[in-house]
Image (spheres, rainbow, N blue to C red):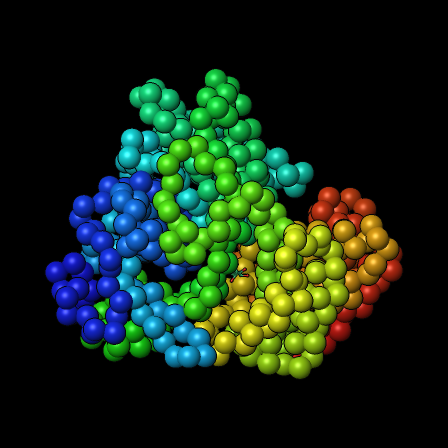
Length: 472
Ligand code: CS2
């Protein structure tokens, strides 16, 4: 038996049901990047908005690459369950917000039309850090082959910029209103970044559309937070047992969730406050705290934990040496680099994060966090290092974690999934252990635009890289 609109009535009574008539809702939101995070985060907020009586905020979900999620969701009519696991056991609810699923490479024109649909007011994105194509200097990486292809051709886009450009052109031609486009990825100033990169793309392809977009669209920044591990086969089996039917799109997550959105909208938007979202004048203080503390700690747990032989976050944070390091990284280095907003308590935030990391029911794989480090560590670690360096302070905990990352990307101990994997392995081959630190963080190094290590920090990094090489 498989979860779908026909047999949804046969779910056990403990599973919380939808509070709205799903068939009566138009798609007001279009989402790009249909991973587990979206299904456990923005989709839940849309579901809450509609359950609270706000209408027509169903989601058209688009996978930009793989058909996998569509193949899980479509046979279920878009229905799936979210299970929250914390200290107090398990709670499952049904989510119905996603009513249509598309796979971009299968039918690019339909995706463009879906974004251009008059009912759509809001586009949300979870396309991961690498999906934005920011170059080393912060501008659009026009040399990246998919961006270059989208700059040259308008049919069959490959990037978010290509899709948004094509859809915005259609909206302008149809006299449709502009869009609020919301980045929900872990990047600093994500709204400004997206608006800037897309603006650059449009300037190069269609300057008049760049102007129209500036006048008609908005790109609010957001802080999104919920730990959502990639669901395992074991999770799916367990959920199927609980539901008495199969749910191939089920997600398992922590009870905690947070969404702070800059109050900067082009038109109507869902009443996400119904799900607890905060609409605020400025999200920056919350966003940078989250990136440098939560995500910074996560990446440290990932690389240090993997080298110590751990598989999951709760195991790594249970290691006294790693826990002490992560504690220092969050409080003495990351928090100390921030200027908190009124009422923002970074000490309490660090306490709460340690508890969340220790959740033993989540099985959050370190290898999942270790992915794409080259596009994560700049906003998670390197900004902190740079800010602290300006005040003459060193960050031994981050340096230790950074050394683990440097060793990791050599590629001989773990499978490195990273857009720069080949380049980083090549740098290792060309420079060896003696030269890799300078090649990355010395003058003219690959990441020197983000942070340039002093000779003292380079020596500390080199020593730590060598020590990790000796482990196990
Ligand atoms: C994690 C994040 O995979 C990663 O890199 O650090 O996905 C993290 O779990 C979320 O940002 C939590 O909100």
